[in-house]
Length: 146
Image (cartoon, rainbow, N blue to C red; front, side):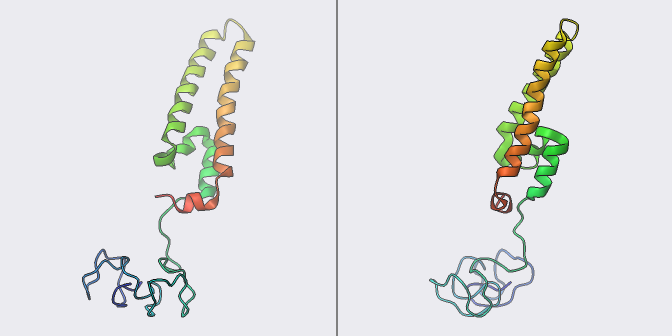
């Protein structure tokens, strides 16, 4: 990574450049990926082809869509703990619904088998909702997760 203010190569991802003292990502004078001089209007570096503002080969965190879908398939609504900051309400609604339907299924199990199946359909519905919700989100949503 290179400082976008002075073009000096940086070790790791420091908050401030040791050469010029600026925040390495704040300026727009040098490509962050290769250190080539650029203008503030540059969107793609002509030397290395990297999009200005992104370091090629370096991940910015984010989440994995595959992991989220697998969690939904095997653990139902617990997948929303993986993306809790954005999906907290879905997790809590599903947890309350699961507890409620579980209690009702136990209480009504001696009354009628039909009641048990009706309540279990709610749990099945939440499971399907979790799988569909995680599968239909674009990969970019997961990559940009912060």
